[in-house]
Length: 135
Image 1 (cartoon, rainbow, N blue to C red):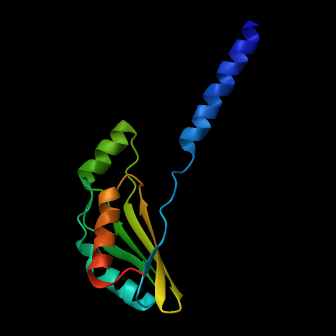
Image 2: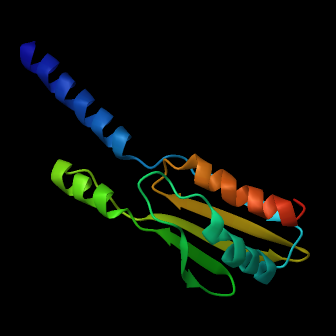
């Protein structure tokens, strides 16, 4: 009986560990009455003005195409050193935007990494909402 209980506890612990590692549910895409190129151009112009998270440098355009743009903010040197000493990851903060043209509107998919930056996501949506009507 003890080995069954021990096996059950180990199985439960493994299940909880796997659940903790699973990705969080993604956000739905946003529809705007705009052209894909207009979406990307707006983000290229105003995206670098988004307030970076604490411990990060400013956002800059890392890569861009007609349908995608990626912004990146590197960790500040002090933040990187503390992260190295404590073993806490100090990866760059990234905003990835992909826009798909669909007839007279664009579907915009936004990804923010790390996923614990809701203010960054909200700031980007505010930029889009300030210029384009939602479809």
